[in-house]
Amino acid sequence: MPLYMHPESFCDICKDSFELFSGASSPKAPCALSCGHVFCRGCLMHVQPHLNRGYTTSIRDCPMCRERYSRDCLKPLMVYTLPFTNVTPGGHRAREDASQQGQASRVFSSLNVGDWMRKGKGYESKYS
Image (cartoon, rainbow, N blue to C red; front, side, top):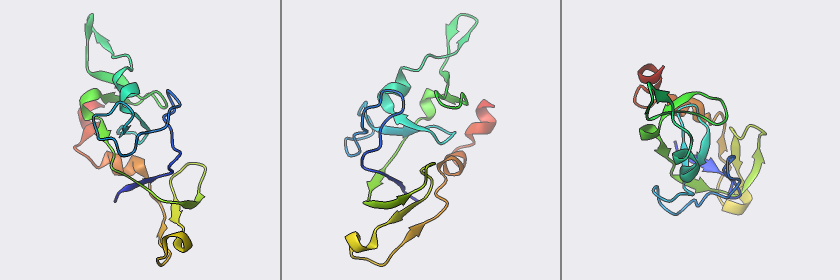
C-alpha cells in the first residue's frame, strides 16, 4: 500500500518541506525508519552515530522516539499526494476527496506506517 502524504508535509528536524518528486537520493526526499517516523534523507544522514570502543558504527537513534536504526536501512518513500479532506492529528488515516478527484469515495483507514515498516526485512530482530 502506498503512503499518502499531505502536500505541505515537512521534516520535523529541519522544518523544510519534502521534495516529493525529486528521487530517492535527494537530501529533501522523505525516508522512513523502522519505527515509522519520516524525515528528510539529509537530516537522517547527519544524525550522530553510536560509538563502540571509540569507533563509529552505523547505528543511530530516531530523533523522535530513540528507537535504534541503521543508516543502511533507510527506506525512501514513494509518495502520492492527494487533496485531503480529513487527516487525524496522528496522520495515520486519510480520506481522498471524491468530489475533487471525480471518483467514488475511497477511505483509507488504519494506514499505520509503523506496522508497515516493521514487516520489512526483520529489522527489529537484527538490531534489538
